Figure 1: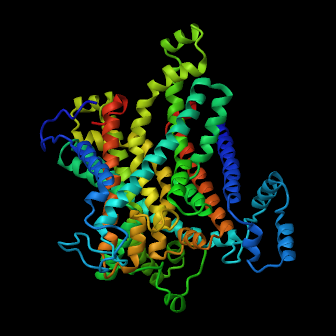
Figure 2: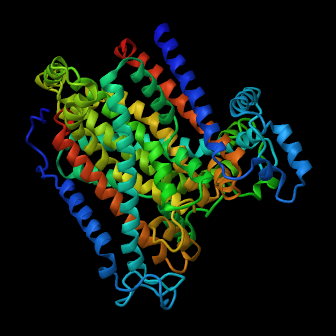
Length: 338
Length: 280
């Protein structure tokens, strides 16, 4: 296990190094002078020279890369051109809201996707199976921004069942201010027993979480179904049937657990995908997360901020993959041998 | 796979999803090719009355600039299919070339190429596309480049693993013993026999490429006026959504139906061509 851990950690570090180099390269593709972008179009040549000096823009590229890595490691992720705040501070404020949204969506996706996958496997190639496969295919094919706009129009604007946008009713900030611990509103409201904000946040969360959940629910349902059907064809399933277990019991009592291993690994992939997919949803529902921050940074062509978002999400993604890999090593010893 | 031994319960129904997908894809290709003849109205010149609701004259209504939405959608099929074909061609060519080298040569070449794909795969596809599309000027070509950059590693991996397994076959050994140079072996023997999984993967990916390109255009990073593009149409329509729902609903449905069609077609092809992964 220790060797497996060390090897996976080494691979992850290599990937992170590559991610940093790639982000640096992409950001250097920006047409125009980064010094002008920072100092503004009216800056004098002296001011530009000073900015170049300060950020080392006249140094050769490898030296700039080294400086960039050193800055990243010391917690200096640059300054946003738009908010004029350190990018890391901005990310620290925005990331928890995204985590809240994607977390809620993934819980929803697992709670719905796994049982629905079991249902489809149980009635393989019969009406419920076709229904599940058709719906899950639709769920993975729907453009999220369009689904977000449509649900917002129907359930918020027309029917008024849910609030239109935002994370919670901002008037509550004065009547029952929230003490921040984790920056994740739902968690903080729960810890501090702030019920008005908790209920308001949950109401605001429903529509965006449903939209973000569409893709992972479809994927998890399809994966669960496929893994279950494969598992139900194994010798142990034949044995269980011979012992008199019914088909539902074979699936849920014996086949489900081993089937969840591949489903687990897909959850990590889908997690990162959902954060980025959530970007589009956040923009529609004005959710104060990374996506809205990224959308506003994109509009302002704010490259340091965009580089920060890119780097953060890639790091989270690498970490999620690492954790799932190690978890699989715990669950299934055969993985370690590979 | 063995099927449930019990015959009780609901009747089995043959699965026609793949055929449905194929039919929709054929219709789309026809719509894209024949757009100038099929479209009931010209897209650019004389504007019609703006924001007309769907009617007999304008099945999908007209938009804020007085263009017929149905005609725009038909022309939009051209843009989407062009992007999908271009992205898949570029990324499959680059990926398969690198994958062949990695898989056939093995050794350090494989290690270097595979570690590079690891790095690219550490970005969720849409994220890297987003970052690239931000720094490049918005256009259809930017979309193609930005998506192809995130898609090629999958093909490199796929091609590398198939090439590695084919490189151990007897006929490849035979060719090597006869002194056929390595590039020729790859071109004549390894490549043709590795193409099936690549083609299946391309049809599976087309839906994802179309969704990603629509998202980039929706964010204003892709196709620009006056190109007809579905994602761009949704973006332009969202300001008028509460009063003129058709400007958002129909282009969105076009994206949904197209992505759905490619996804089910790809799944059907995979099940038909790859006996190991048959999921009945």
